[in-house]
Length: 121
Image 1 (cartoon, helix red, strand yellow):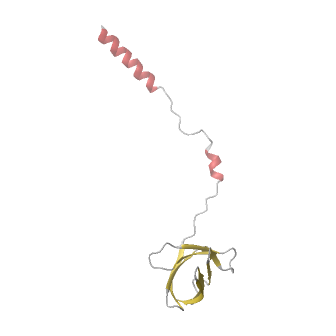
Image 2: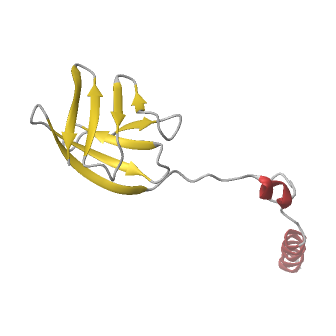
Image 3: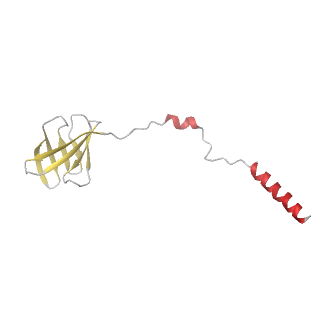
């Protein structure tokens, strides 16, 4: 008899668990997230290596927004992001300045501790 009561009690507990509803999240409407504009970062449109007047090599990753570029002074160094406020303005970062574009045969680069110099592709 005790076994029968135990089985009935366990069955009742399992039935009660099946009826429980679990709600995930904060119940915000999905439509509210559809108004958010997602802006992806620009992609690399060209990568060029330039030889500078002091015989050093620099690598520029020209980005598709035409307002920014990644500069590397050493082969495996961390790139420095340079950005311009307008299309015709030089791309700058702290201590850096880059004038030119991916289609030009040469660029002018200034970096910390070095004078501005012309570098050719």
